[in-house]
Length: 277
Image (tube, rainbow, N blue to C red; front, side):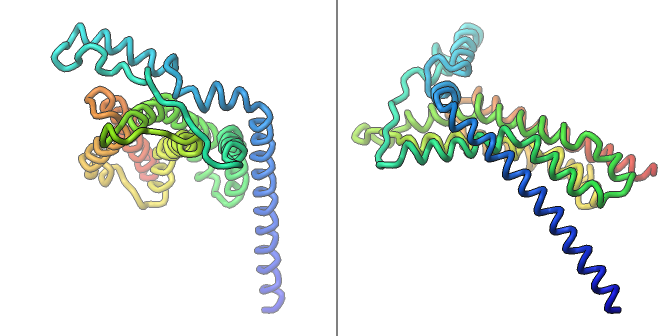
């Protein structure tokens, strides 16, 4: 009994040791990427972070072109310049002594997480793969590639679509002419980084559904039953984070619903393969 207990304890300690090295390598990857982002601050801030605040940002230019097109096609629904936004945003201010340095550190860390994400997922896969059966490894083939691709798509969607729409809405919104919008650097960076990371996480829905279906928690039947709830949730979310116009809300809602339908299909494939095997 004593020997068995000792072996079990050693096995558990070995497991913790393996986990520790996976965490060390993951944190090291984030730090290396963050240091790179910290060094190249001109590109990170002037080109990337402050991109959605410039009038010539690609999203604003596309929206202005779409505005002209829809104004000619449906003038009653889209008056001239209705969705041509982002052309007159106020300047940012810094109110604290170390505000800009703190913003630099925070932005570098977030950039490090995003850049190193594929490697982080690879480390996660290396940790869990030895504990999976051969059949489970087969089902999870392409886990690193699919997870990284979906996360990057989500980050890009948050950065190029939701961030500019949210920034334009909040920086131009006023409860009264007596109140002047004076946005700070920290709140602006917090919005951009939070939206990008949140969208990256939301786009992992198909991956989460895959594993939850494999675990027996979800099924295509359950997902189809909650389809109406998903549509309403997507519409509410788009109404909250976008300007109050139909086009912007549709622009945000469509990708979320597409992800949900893909998740139903993935759940169906997993269930079918499980029955056949």
